[in-house]
Image 1 (cartoon, rainbow, N blue to C red):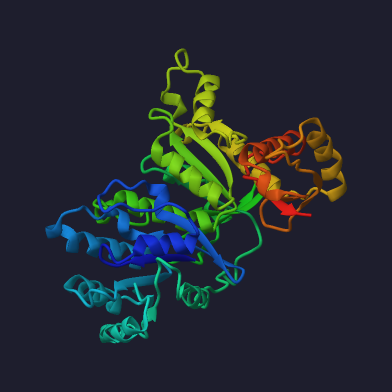
Image 2: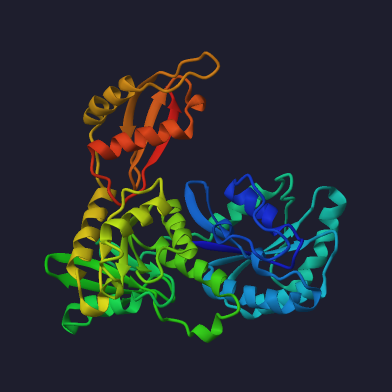
Length: 432
């Protein structure tokens, strides 16, 4: 589920975002130019997980166009999010901009929670009653700066999370094609499903704009999640980057494996790296497809050199299949399917506790965790957790002293001994 935080500037959207996602740094600045990956975070409450979008980052800092920019953001949030948190500021009461946003939300057929921020004393609770005027239900009072009321807000949010699996959806892998505009996503989908129409069964997806296409031939059976070309580009020109992040998240969340297309003639760009970060945050499988490889001069740029360049950019998550394709010429299309299937199997792979300990205790003995303040960390045993992606708990006496570099060492050893190519691994240090 995607939860979007909307509202005019300076009502505390970013602070609320930080609070919900438990991130430590400020997310937005009042000027534009906020990085895309900071707009997006994951949150979980009562065992339910959801995504949070802060829409505040893309308003340009100029009074005369505030309203128009906010209008565009709210429109996109209404289109793409499942739940909207409309944040207002109790200290300034109702402003014209608030009225404008409220009017749009009243017309939209979307779930809205009215959040009154900066309520940190009893007088302000009384002041919050003015917001009943919006007709958007009971205002929920919080103070995002000190956290009061955010527990009640989270309780409210999780009531909107439904098990949205389509009734006629089979329990088979879901591969989502992602990437920047014009890299060949639609061409890839057409190349895969356009040959024999009788093998595809379009069913409506769980979201308004995702179409699941069943692919069942050549010993493959999966859903291809197609979100390409749904919306006219003219509608999203102004907020293209914000929109593309939302769209990427929407399509990512339903996927088991993401097929990331990059344009061989342009190389790996910042937006591709942002999509990879989203894939890692969501713990999805990844296959990188370098499309339009037929346009590259092979004498000057070999696939080995190109692979090295990509790995340098995506480090430390380099254990990822990279396939050089030309979708238009149908080069290595079936190799794409083979790798996607392998990555899906790697993502659901289970390792027995006995085998894990046999391998990892030897690696830990060869290179124990560094001592901190004269204290030595002793890792007793390791087990794989029952999650939908590879995650491992290492039980030790002082988990707080195990730092990221050593966790990376443990992850590399897991990858050396077991096949987890293409899938992120999560390492947890737990108290014995």
